[in-house]
Length: 205
Image 1 (cartoon, rainbow, N blue to C red):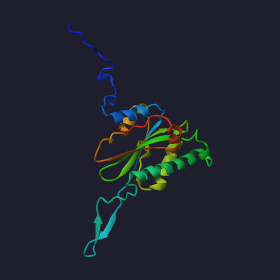
Image 2: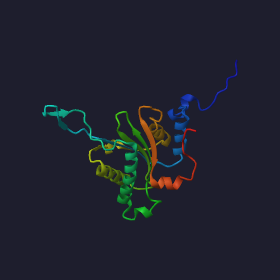
Image 3: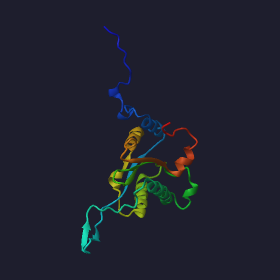
Image 4: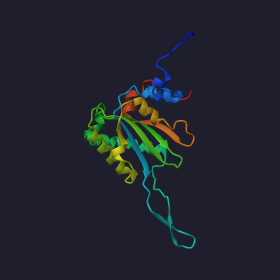
């Protein structure tokens, strides 16, 4: 009988994010699973379709199909608005002196994706810091509606509790290597200030 070496855990015992061979994606998972996350929030800044009309060469009115109003087309737009939304949510939850309550402010890391059609959306890992989940959902939804009244955010399906931070991170980085889509990582000011001195950024050397 041949001696056979077995390694544990076997592949069939591993989670799907542990089987990925991409070193950058694995680095993101390793880094972000160190921190406590409560919610996985998906916010789509793609505006709902609106009817638009224009005139043809003869001056007659025509209807333009599949026209989307989308002022949130760039990744930098989404990054900037997420930071402003962070301030609005913190003020909603912590009151007018929210800026002085760094330890109480919720923290988040956001994966921003831009699809082949040119529309950006974001997936966030959120640490509520003990704040009420329902109040956070309400505050986040109000902030989104303030900047993009027609944004396609579905509160019932956009906020999910995190059971495995590694799995949430793995999903958030799914477009990391997709040439047709842009990808960026941004974090809340509180998270950046607290952890910027620590090792944990993922990059290609």
